[in-house]
Length: 158
Length: 205
Image 1: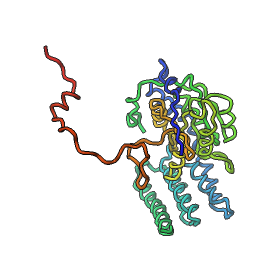
Image 2: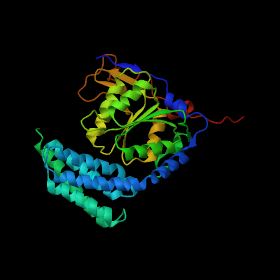
Image 3: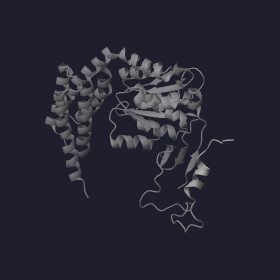
Image 4: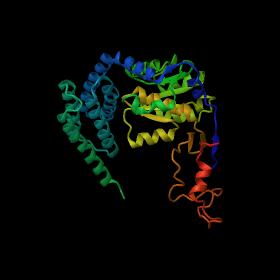
């Protein structure tokens, strides 16, 4: 097998290091402030994704399961940017779970519904990020993913 | 994540993206707004936007790019961000085939991260996007100009970050040095001799 190693000029490095530009701290804080201006739209996006997620989970067609995964990824992308860190964590857990179900060809409607219900509650409950209740619920949901992993591992041919 | 946590202070104190030509690939309008606002915050002024694989391809054909930030999941039933990265690396487009490419994903499972590594992306960043993390990755790419590797199984930046030797069960290449270490031909240096070679000392006159 032939392998070539190619060294290219570092265009990005040259551009970035030209004199002037922004201090790194200023660049980051400006970017964070810019995101903050989008917060109302991002909250609306999370709510809409939750509605569409609920709708997808209620369907029985072939595409519904992939839609559940896709809607959950949408929530992950936005929730953390508008102060809904816990909702984002539950959405990420749902991504993990639905991905494993899709891979294994199984599906547990109750487990999916538990995630959606939890997100809805966390969205409206306004619990602080370090709340023990939210932590306990998230631990329970993580157990579901762990079980799905164990089942998948047990089903794999050795 | 706070600024200090990402150790950006070690990588230089300023960033100038005013002249950088940047391609942002993101199918969701709100997510595109987030990405755009982050790059505006970084001082970028030349951002081109694409919402699909095809649009991204067209931009790659038409203008030289210095940086690409691409969402891993693009339009349904169409090639995704991983396929875009694979296509670009094998496109032979100058200079874009070698452009730094960061994949962005909400679901960074082991499988997705492996796909990102094997499709020729420089980095994968997880959502929700943290400006400090994105900036740190950009600076890292800019400071470590990774060699590109071209072979039938892979085209993209050198994926080796650690020097771990050949993988288990893989025979050594014919031109690798022997793994056998021979007998020492002279006695070991003592610590004073090592120090005299490696430790600079102030001369006292």
